[in-house]
Structure formats: C-alpha cells, structure tokens
Amino acid sequence: ELYVTGSLKNFADKTNIDVKSKYLVIDITDMGEQLSSVGLQIVLEFVWQRVITNRKNGVRTWLWCDEFSVMFSEQSTESGKFFAKVYKRIRKYGGVATGLTQNIEEVLRSPDARTMLENAEFKILLQQKPQNLKIISEFFELSPSQEAYLKTGEKGTGLIICGKKVIPFDNRIKQEGRVYTTISTNFKEYQAKLAQKGAI
Image (cartoon, rainbow, N blue to C red; front, side, top):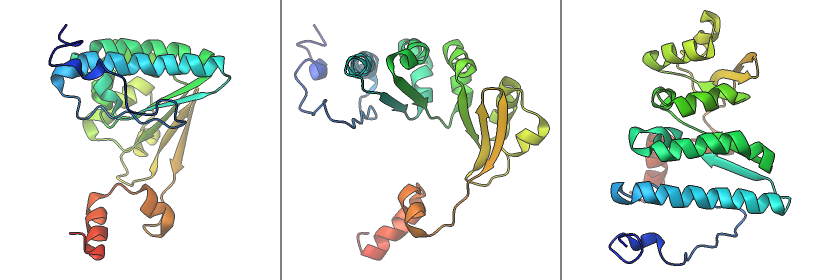
C-alpha cells in the first residue's frame, strides 16, 4: 500500500518519459534511501523487459551501468543478484552489458560480482590506488610488469584483459582540441570554461 497509494507511490503512475526512445538514460542519484530498494527493482526489471522486447524485434541492446559498485553494496544485495543473472544471459538475448566503477574493492567483496568478472571476456583496468592494486593483482593474476601500468599515475594508460591475454595500452591525448574538451571530466577545467563565458 505504501508504494501504491501511500507516500512512496512515485512509481505507481504512468511515466512521462518516452521509454521507446533509442537512447535511454536512467539516473538513480536522487532516488533516496527509502525508495532505492523498490526503485532499483522496478528500474532493473524495466531494463530487462526492454532487452527481451529488443531481442524479439532483432535489435541489439547496449547496457551501460556507471558507478557499478552501488549495485553490489550491502544495501543492494538484490540488485547485485539481478546483475549477475543479466551478465550470464544478456549475450543470448543479443545484448552487451558494461559496468564501470572506480571502487573495484567494493565490487570484489560480492561473490556475485566476482563470478561476473571471472566470466567477463573483456576488461579494461586503469590506474589504481595502492590498496586496490594489490587486490586487483591477486584477482587477475597480474605480473609485476603488468602491475606497473596501473600505477603510472598517467590518465589514459592501463591494461586490457581479453580472455587470457593482458595488453598494456597508452591512450593519452593532448589536453586541447575538440576530442579532449568533449570527453574531459576535469571539474576545474569546466569551472575555467564557465568563467571565460562569464557564467560564474
């Protein structure tokens, strides 16, 4: 009743979003703790139903989940189990699932997430903090020379793990031009840009 007619009925009405759009971004940042458990279940079930519908229509689904560690926190055990199932099944449904996280330590605490990582064929590892690097090295069985690519401190460098192959990469770009300004998430640079426009 609380979720249907009560104070937490946010998901009980029809949505005002075009859910048939080709690109759909679902932001759960402002969901709040009270709504997060039921909200996540509704959102994830919607995503999976979209995967099923797309498969019937011969459409490939690309699923990107940023801040993936949130799905495997102690408060989100159900969402962790859900993603473990999705990662096992999505390829058969013509889908591709990608998880992104800066907090690999929290992800590796979950047995479901560890299984997912073991089964994932393609992984990209970027620079790591010392405590995370030790955990990652043990989990992925990295050699000392491979480890070195994860502690350079250089943005744009790291390792690609594809099957049993481990490939170092250096994809640094110059801090100028359209590509850099498009992909940069440096907040100080963003502030400077606003200041130049007189917005702040």
